[in-house]
Image 1 (cartoon, helix red, strand yellow):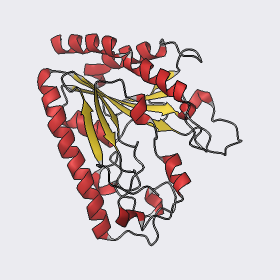
Image 2 (cartoon, one colour):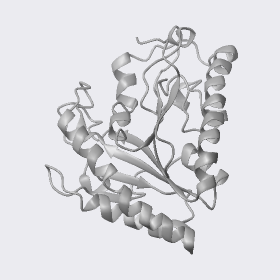
Image 3 (cartoon, one colour):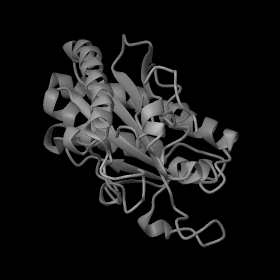
Amino acid sequence: MRTIERPPFEFTGDWSGQSVATAIHNGHDVRPEMAAELVLPEDDRLREEDPHTDELGALIPARVIVNRSRFEVDLNRSREEAVYRTAEEAWGLEVVRNPPLDESIVAGSLEVYDAFYAELARHLDRVAERGPFVVFDVHSYNHRRDGADAAEAPPEENPEVNVGTGSLDRDRFGAVVDVFIESLSTTGTSSGPLDVRENVRFRGRQLAAWTHARYPDRAVVLALEFKKTFMDEWTGRADRARIDELARALASTIPSLEMALREVAIS
């Protein structure tokens, strides 16, 4: 099991523009006292994390990369729900040795949660001062949950990219979302155009809701769930070529988004 010491999160890149990528479920690290309590097999834990989402957003100028596992602290849940104390809070998975977790361990995880959102506020406050901005809230999802040799989940219900906009003010920013979906959908890849649809499986959670609440007239958070076609979700083996072309496809949407954001700022 990978324990630390890497920083729990990193804010990196060029923050002078209006485009930010986050990878808040990318991490696999856990601090030693939490590692001692975890009983979930490491392969199962990795399957429920979002590895390589930092790479999917690597070409976005400003980036936020979380190194801590969601099984230590889930930054995409409310503070009250951010630490999985019981199986019921983790999709039925037996995560910890003797649930519920000791509150001293929970407190250590919440320190990371509070520090993350304080740092995010410091960075985004400066971005918001300049005008509307977009956050690519990059995640990934499993589509072969029935087993390594089982059929994939039906594509009708599982787009290549699910765009979650559940907390977005669509009256104000709907045109920006539409531009993004059109731009990404028409980007060519080695397997053809991407199937990009809105709110089919996921609508976005805490990071999007927090950002939209703090910057209601500025923030466009696109909670992006990439189907794990860029890796084998059972072995963890990555398809580097696919990751690279998805990263290029995502970055290619920025010029169209910048134009759409300028139109919102003028209106």
